[in-house]
Length: 267
Image 1 (cartoon, rainbow, N blue to C red):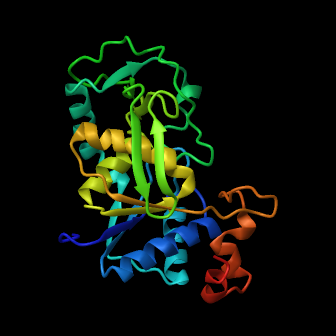
Image 2: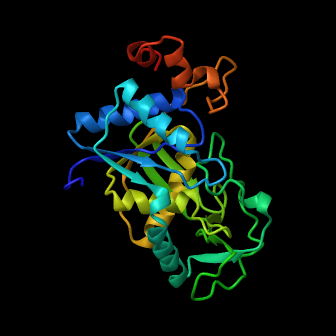
């Protein structure tokens, strides 16, 4: 779709209403795509089967259009399970992953984008000695084996030079869950490659996730896009905005009579 030119994406998850923080990031992605005369995708990241709702999917499209954002192509992650399984099998074949028997609590954030300060603790490697086998096992969690001590570096187009050390800043991370779903990290990498994304615009809370995704890209032989991590929007107490901030959702602002111009002026 990108035809060798710029390709960006909006990647909301339908687990709640979009808020001002989402709006600023998506507006930045929209502007950068249009300034580059490029392609902009909307990717519905609906893999969180416990929290994703169709009404939120409808609402996010309505709110984005109201804000003034348009896109050229659409993709829905729930329809791409075959692609994720193929990628996972490639990781198995190459020895990059191993089965993990850790508790459900350890794995509960695997299908969600991490938040500020990163929600995934450095794994202690308890299951590293497990043999991966040649085929995916059902009802099994898998982790990616990071190259301990390797420094992953990238130049962020907004946040500047970044470096993270594998095994210290980011440990072995989940790529597949026993309920048959890929992790956020794996699905994101597979889809960015399929969509030929050349630049990823997202929040600064995902800087460490970028290091993990670069490792996956290398393992799968995929290109690494450029990255632009936006500053986070915070509430009056200095906390990062989240979907619990209903009063600052685009839907609430619309219903209170705000115009798109007034909302964009708050970015």
